[in-house]
Length: 248
Length: 327
Image (cartoon, rainbow over all chains, first blue to last red; front, side):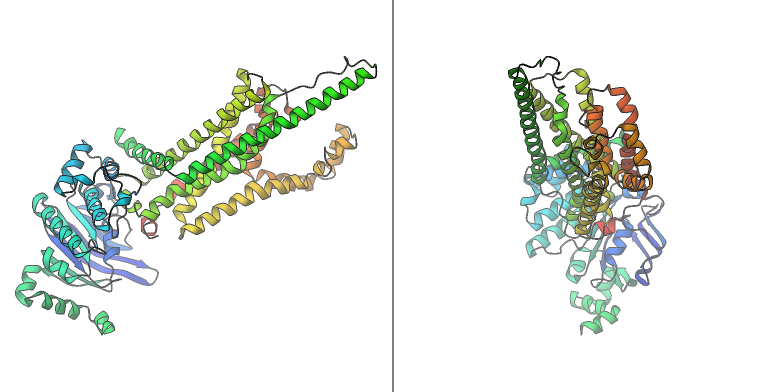
């Protein structure tokens, strides 16, 4: 049985002459919490959009749970959960109504029970009857996470999940991601440009620089080799030289 | 089959509930109803003035000792009172159609929820069908409400209970109005789905509205030789029908261009059909329904063709959720 939940080969996305993602070959194993690190504009979101079937690659292949995101997109989507950056949902609907909508679209059997279970897991059942429009960013992100895991996906794609959250919100979300991975065995594919997020949440790391994968390893090996979080930062800056020079 | 239909109904149900909470759409529908009632009241006042003038003239004749019994009573067609109402449906109905269509796409773009929907195991056609179904249901509900109120108002004003044929005529015009508003819904939806920037979509949709709802019919009317004098040139000059035909033959190219401008407008097709079926246009007042329908079937086909063409355009093109999630 193929243990790779995400597998790309020479995956490329071009916009005219500009290649947002170049020949990306990457594999993420089942059960991993994979942190996809890179500067703003490195191609992380484009990669997630291709893997979640939102964008058609220019060339190359991408499989999610063995299903091609281009030729078997419907099948691939059954295995996917997706939380975009700044998820907003429907403001005039309650959290439960929002979740019911997405549960039905995902074909969840007995959606009401599943919603209760999911909200219990995320420790926010009290939010169910409230309008999403009244939520803070952190609560909205939590309901965003709930909609993405209602159908118990094999892989959850998170695009900058902690963007704009306060420190408490970041910690809560981080804990939830880890619990989700441990309790449900969900593979996490997380875009971020925050090194602290990677070191505290992820089991493996990939670094994307100007659309190219420049580093890929497990956090365990990276820590063995480089030590602390500050060394991880040095590693990141060393494998993304062009942007680092620009920043300096 | 259930798996195919379930997502369509889920999306449609959500959109309908959403629209019912949208104050702007409620306000526009209320405005249509109010404007229609005002138009009906104005028509009723005009009718009462005509009746009073007639009664006064008849009484004058009798006072002069002349025999007034030979003067036939004027024919009264209650559905004629709906002229202003039909014109409001033409203009405001089209605006409401555009706004509901625009809203159906803009609400997902603005909230970035489209990306969440299209990463579910549903096909693009199911998403679009759900949206179109919701739009059709919202438009139909508004029109049914408007036509029922207009029908009741006609009965109240005229004191004449509408017969089954009159109700049938109203139902036909209501269906045509539904098709007409649906075409504008699709216009608003397609432009809001495809435009790079949402405000551009609204600008484009209203440019089309302005061109086809206001300008084209107006040009057609203004260029009509028979419209150059109040009451009609031929009527005022007392030119008989055969001579009219002969005169107009000299203007055949001009008339082809004028008619071409008119038929480019879905509004004109809706108006021609409605005015004929309701007997608003004198030529058709009191005429049986079936021959009118046979004559005006092409207008209905045009409305259907426009809605179908926009529908095909909508379903044929692949969505670009990446663009739609960036607003």
